[in-house]
Length: 105
Image 1 (cartoon, rainbow, N blue to C red):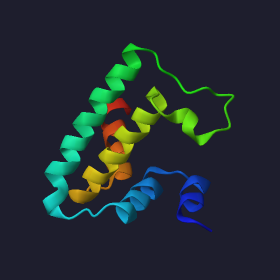
Image 2 (image 1 turned 135 degrees about the horizontal axis):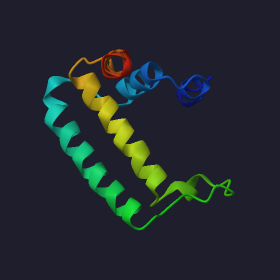
Image 3 (image 1 turned 45 degrees about the horizontal axis):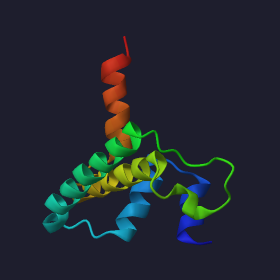
């Protein structure tokens, strides 16, 4: 089973974070780089949102995602996960705690 198939089989935040960790070095020296990449990708996402650039849902081609909001959202997620790894943040646990704090009575 390839790494990608393993990640897409059960795409939890933890599994995605582990996948990104294997793709990108998460050493402390990359913290600033990952933050800057995240900001860059958010800027690219804003352009795709402004232009309403969407992926063609009927296309079977992998390249159909290029220059779309879906691609940029995936890039934002990737670098958010890389940044979380660089700071040793379990994003799934942090998200659950935040939601409980914010929305539980």
